Image: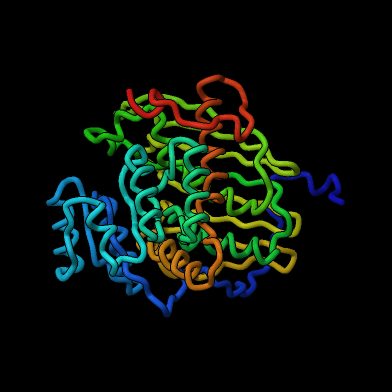
Length: 372
């Protein structure tokens, strides 16, 4: 039991020890499956770099803007096929997995058509606008015996992946608190469609962090969420760039602070406290993080390889392929991702109501939350 002498904010000194070796890197898949890409917008350049890293071949491309599909094909696989419609791409027997990277509103029909065509699906995040729709799609995939996963690529960012593996290995015991603080400049959205999204931060951006929490907390169920947004002085973007979320668990608490108007001093920090130890990750941005594992034995700082981009996209498709090969549910499967979305939806509704919302009560995103 701690004495009054221990009542201080200062950390106890601990010796530096060797970091445990954990399998945090994207899996190596021997039986590689061929992919088709539906939706070839800007972010899919990162998808393609991740697939290149893993040695995966995208053989078919489709986009409402034909030239987008042509650019992706010509850049990454000149021998690939460009199709005028998603129906034509889904009829291509060479395609085994479909990466659907469109906006959510159009994605429901595309996912349903892909499942009915017998294709495994990697859906862009955020997965759906309605939890009921997500449940329906998950049930359809199970009925048709195909795998449906969500591209929550942040799970395979090296620092996130190492910390979740450390928690899974029991290195810090049961998680009792998670504190996340992200400060970055999101004003780049001015002039883009994102600038017309009222809940840009809590919905489109923070879904990665809600999903990280979902991973770190394992099978434990989130109870309630309190959310708040703030239009920061000096911000150039139209949507509020400040946001806060507090998530309640039995025996644990989670706090998230997002400052999307940090034109100076950008920082991304995570502190996870457990009953046997702690994990800390910090750095100037998502691509540069130092992880520290603190236990009774001392402090360990693994020398992590890779970066979120492209490792995250490699990891997401690799895990899907392994799940198909091993005939199991992917760890980023649709049903698991609905837990992450339920937290995000509750945070948004809470910010609108000014009171905490039970996780699962906010079933869908209202149109006015996503479009001014």
